[in-house]
Image 1: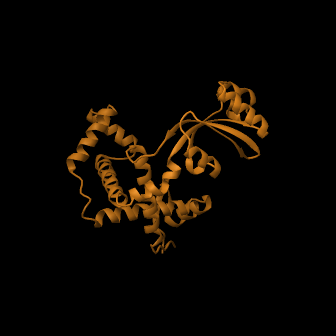
Image 2: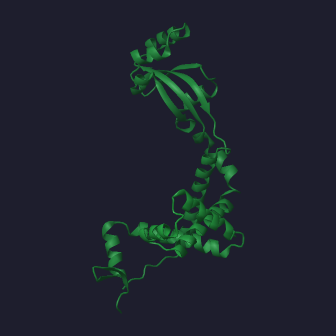
Image 3: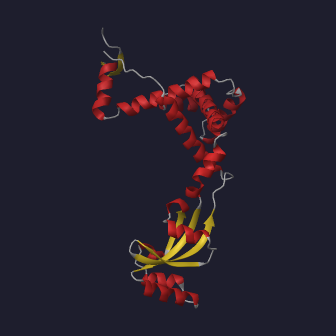
Length: 252
């Protein structure tokens, strides 16, 4: 049985089985199939659920806003844009409506699990802005600690003595996730207050003094963080759905 044509390149047809072989040779077949399965699961879920209804007015307004933002209000200009992007109005309209349905599905799937997931991930989401001075021996570290406590400049001493690369920025390490801190550093930081000096603490063969600059506790009030966690949960849900599918690759 002759394989169906998948593409035509310079009037030469490329069959489905040849396209599959090309994808295998490039190492991208698994990703290609994965993308298909992902879309299949999403569309099946949207079609079978009764709680994913999108107002047509919402889609129309989104398209109007898009055209205004991208200076595509002129019908001819918009048609040219659609053509240049390999689509047409019906396909574009369907895509916009689908994006709203996908967001609704994400919310329905993830919102019941989000508070618990946030608590599980919170140690990695909470951050602290730290500065440090890392030296080779405890005696020097304690001497620097004394100088700072007596009014010496942390920044100047970091530039002068620290072995860490961040000495060029006065020892400023920037935001550090609590979950990635070594246990003994996290234990000390958790009971410190902003501006407090912590250490010396032995880490990676050096003795470090840390100054707590600021705490950045995570919150679900943070829209970007909430969206990121929703995306993580949704991808986990999708992966579980895909794992349960029975998939057969059928080419001649």
